[in-house]
Image 1 (cartoon, rainbow, N blue to C red):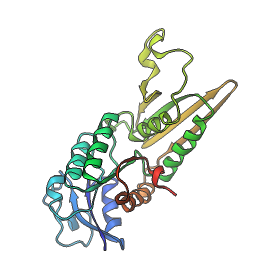
Image 2: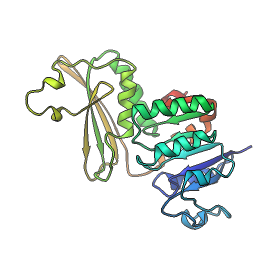
Image 3: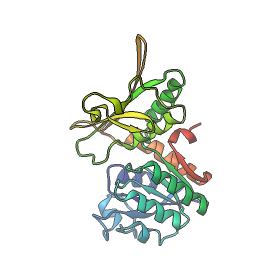
Image 4: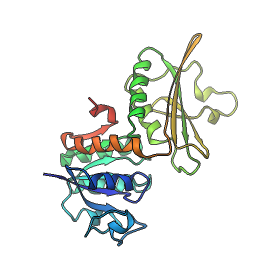
Amino acid sequence: MKLNICVAGATGWVGKPLCQAILVSDDLQLVGAVSRTHQGQPLKDVLEVSQPGLTLTGSVEDALKAPTDILVDFTSAQAVKANVMTAIRHGVHVVIGSSGLTGGDFEEINRAALDKKVGVIAAGNFAITAVLLERFASEAAKYLPHWEILDYASDAKMDAPSGTTRELAYRLSQIRKPELSHPVEATVGSKESRGATLNGSQIHSLRLPSYVISVEVIFGAPEERLTIRHDSGSGVTPYLQGTLLAIRSVRDQLGLIRGLDAIMK
C-alpha cells in the first residue's frame, strides 16, 4: 500500500521537484499540495505533471481533508510551525525541511508529537554531505574543545542562522559546550562582533549574493586548526534523496527526531 503524502510549499525550489519525485515513485502517493500563491489551480498545470484531479490548496488544514499519512513542509520560517502543529493535531506524521524553528519550538513540537503518537523528522539540510559534516564535527568536538561556526546564505534569506547551522550547533551541544578563553560578555569594544551564541556555540551569519547554503565549523587548538565545511550548489538534487529517506522512515519514529543522521544506517 502506498503512503499518502501532502507537500506544503509544493511550488517552491524543493517542493516542486519533490512532488514530481513522489508522483513517479512506486511506494508514495501525492494526495495534497499546498501553495498560497497558486491555490485553486490544477496541480498538473502548475507542476507540469500528468496528475488529474488534484488541486493546489492554500492551507495545510484544507489539504489534510484528504486522508494523509505524512506532511512534508518546505514553506517558510513564518509558516512552518503552524503547519507542523496542524498536521500533528490531525495525527499526521511530519517531515520538516523549512528553517526558522527555535529550540523552544522543537520542544513544543516534540511534546505534541508524543501526545499524538506520531513521528516528526526535522533536518536543517537533507543533503547527505551536510549530514556528514554534522557527524564529522560531532566526532571532532570530542577531542577539540574550541570552535566557532560560520553560516553563509543568500542575501534573500530572511532567517538567521540557517536551519543547517542551528542543527549543527544543537548536535555539538550534545557532545559538550565549547570552551572560551575570554567570555563574550567581557569583550572590549562591540560584543556583537563576536556573533550570536546558540547552544553554547558562537555563530557568525553572512548573507550575500551567490551563496545558497554553506556552513563551516572551525576547531582551534594550540598550533593547529581543523576546518570542516559544507557548500550547497544551486541544484536541488542533493536534497531529494535525503527527503525521500525521511519520508519513508518517519512513521517508524515517535516524537521528534532532529537531523537526518539519526536515521541513516
